[in-house]
Structure formats: C-alpha cells, structure tokens
Amino acid sequence: MAMLQNQEPAKKRSKLVLPEPQISDQELQQVVKLGRASEAAREVATEGGHQPSDTLLADYSLTPAGGTRTPRTPALTTDRILQEAQNMMALTHVDTPLKGGLNTPLHSSDFSGMTPQREIVTTPNTVLATPFRSQRSDALHTPAGGGFHTPNLDGSRGAVAPTPIRDKLSINPEEGLDVGDTPQAMHNYQRQLKEQLRSGLSSLPAPRNDYEIVVPDSEIEMEAPVEAANSVEDQADVDTRYLAELKAKRELEMQSRSQPVQRDLPRPVEVNTAVLRPPHTDPPLTELQKAEEFIKREMITMLHYDAVYSPPVIPVETKKRGQVTSQAQHLVYLEQHPYETYSQDQLAQAHAILQQEMEVVKQGMGHGDLSLESYTQVWEECLAQVHINNI
Image (cartoon, rainbow, N blue to C red):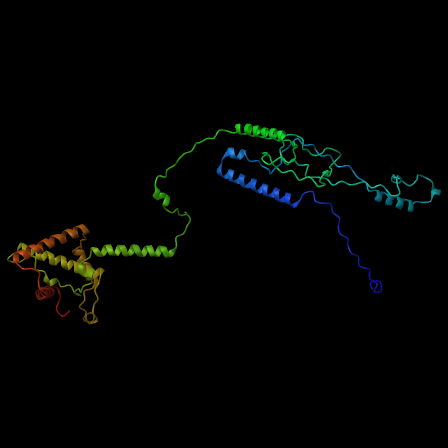
C-alpha cells in the first residue's frame, strides 16, 4: 500500500544495544547517603566550634592529591572503514595515467583478511582515576597501561567490580583486601586493625574541661522585652496611654477639690458676699467671731474657684434675668484672694482635727448624733446665709 501511494515504507527502529552501566543505582544511593551524613556531621561540629571534632571529620568537597598514576592521553584510533571509503573515492576520481606523475595517494590497507580489521575503541574509565579512599597500602591504584581501560571483569562471577567508597578514616570494612580465609590470618588482621586504631587514638589531643559560668546581673533585665530602636508604636496604644494618664491626673486633681465638686452636690449660682461682717466694727469681733469670718472668707474663695474650673449648671430663667456673676468677676476676686491648694496629708490631718472637735462638742453639749429634723433646720439656716434670695 505504501508503494502504491508513492510513500516510503515505514521502518522500525531497532533497540539500542548499550553496555551495562559500570556504576549501579544502589552504589550511587550509597555514595549520596554517605555524603549527606558526612556533611550533617561537619555542620554540627562547625556550629559547636569544637576543633578536635573538626579534625576527625574528612572534607570530601575537594579530592586531595594522592600517589596515583597520572592517566596517559589515550592513543589515537583510526576507522578502517572510513579509510577504505576514502581510497575508493580517490581511485574513482583519478585522472588518466597518460599524464604521468605520481600515483594517487592512498591509505595503507590491511590485507590479512577479506574485510578490514576493526580496532576496538575502549571507553575511558573516569571512576577509577580518582582516589576514593585512603588505603593502608598502595595496592589499589588506577590500572597502569596504555591509556584508559575498562575495568576487567571478574572471571569467577563475570560482573563489574563495585565502585570504591570514599573513606578517609578507614572505618568501613575492607572488602577489596586479600586478608585470607584461615582463622589465623583473620585474627592477625583484626589485631593489626586494633593496633592501628589504638595508635591513632593515642595521637588525639587531650580533652579540655575549660568552661566559664556567666550569671546575669539582673533577671528583670533579661525578662524585659527588647524593643527595636526603629520600631514605631501603634497610634491606638499611644491614644489609650494618653487617656489613661489624663484620667489619673484628673482623679488626683479631684482629690484636692471641695466636697460639693467631688460628690456632685448642688451649689449656689451666685456667690453671696453679704455673709461677711465688716472688718472694723464697734465693738470689735471676738476670737470666735474672727474664726467664723475666716471660715466664711475661705468658703467664698472656694465658691469662686469652683465656679471658674467646675461651673455649675445654671437654669435658663436665671440666665434671662442676668443675675449670674461672669467668669471675669470670679477671676478678679481670685486675683485679690488667691486659692491655696493643700496636699493630701494636710487635708487628712485637718479632717482628723475636725473629727476630734466634733467629739468634744458632742460631749460638752451632752447630745449624740443629730436627728434628721435638727440637721435639716441647721442646713436651711446655713443655706439662707450663703444663697441670695430669689436665686
């Protein structure tokens, strides 16, 4: 059908005939595992900073120079079939012999058989050219000879010899050594290994127990979080801290204010200064009256101060009548009579003296706590003196 349709017949490709690999997958996996384990152990020793441990680990990153033979450059090989083809082309395109001259140059041919003799091209072996392990003797080296050679096959098993494993410390079993099959030879070999191990351990440096204990100066400093110098605090945290500080400051100021302000009690809208007596009267004031006038003057100063910094709620009708003292008048009075602030200790001491005086008055007048009616009557009399009528 292909020939009728003027198509070339389909040809099936033959399978490639390749030689068996010299290194098996199991050997490659073993080499990779050993390399990873060696690198992990070296990283642990490097992080700890232990120099003796570092000397026990071999560095396989670079293969050191050993006593191996330098491989020779492989000999040049010739293709006999190509030479014969070139000879045939030269004889076909030759000129007439009537011209004379030299004959056509041809490659030398081998007429030992019907077909040209083929020279076997050997594959270079780069595995055995590298010293993989430090042997105890120079028995295992790259095979000497002309150029690179493929490893010889074992006549008994007919398999390729396994790839030597990197082992500079010689801790893996020696599979390639000819120890011997007799028990005496094996015993001698084990004794040599023990002696070599003992001599190697004796050359190690002596252990050192130098250590230093550092006690922190303050545990609080260690527990305190270390903030970065370039860190920016969140604005929400800044606002919260500012409001907390402002609230604490107001509470501290409120403790030094008067009781009506602290307890939010009703206060007079207009300060009545008529409760004060004239300073010069005839007859003069007694000591008790002077003390009473001093208390009244202090009360009026506190009313002016509270009206400025904590103004009370003023009814609308009072505002319409214009009977409210302006803030400027309060400030003028405070300039003439400054408001003095006292500490909490001084206020507590004054409160204790007042309680003692109240107990003395109760005992002197022979009465206990006032009843609600008596307290209301005294309160109204005092309020009538402070408040201005119709306010």
